[in-house]
Image 1: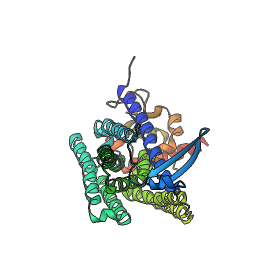
Image 2: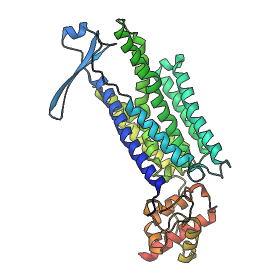
Image 3: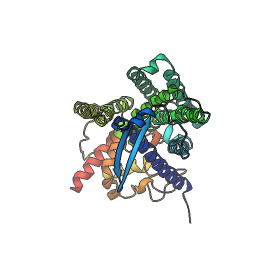
Image 4: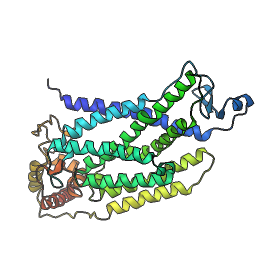
Length: 398
């Protein structure tokens, strides 16, 4: 019996990351909705106690009555639920996954020697430097006068992330660049919870227990970071699924595509936020969808269909596949650390090559995302011949 422990560990971490991420994002979206859907309290006693809003809800056959205090209740409740572990475990599992796939496997997934010839340790330190640097820049910006204006702050932070995406794309592989932009955003979001939101909430609790009146600024600062997290959620989710789409990270302008798609989801999120407040504006989703279509057209502008030609035989196609793909995509992989063909995709037989022809063209012809890091040195001419040969083979099949 042979067990691919790296693959099983990767599965466990990815699954755990997904579960905790759903819990974190779900609670974040829920509380944004809760804040925006409340109405002024009807009970005069509640108003006098500092309640600023209330909401009745029904779920799972039960009725719920929620109240929000401007600062805090007069007395500390005995049982208080904290929303923090979802964020912590999402970041921890994400960082472990990043370390396993992109740092431990840096030579395959992170380094692109055509961009920068660095060793795995250097690549890891650069990646960590961007992640830490992103938090330092963001946190410092929040504490300046700019941080008080969410619109101006949002524009500057968006520009900083776009600049980071541009720089990372000139250092790492497309996948490596994307995942590090996501890691920067995810780290900022988790650090907001760990460094600001929870500590400020603890200070409020401590003041109540001491019989003191908590400072309203504690809640205001925590709320600011919570709002920021809300808007950063959709771009980080985009990064999480981007490794399935080579037309994103495999494009020469992948940094600009990531920025464009991230910008296009802002109006979508804004629509729902305003809708919860009773201010429905359908121009927001229209602008968002138009932005998505615009990015799609931009990303596809440089791609051209590959014409079939009889000059490239099936034997030549198989020779190229054996040289550049079969080390991993085979029933008996020879690549170090690969014990089974990724996703069960194998190219040992010509019918298997035809079966996955569309995926091969997408990743090795239309874009240069395969072989990973182009470690076999696949040339542009080989990619052209592979595309033409695949088109010819598919025509003969029909």
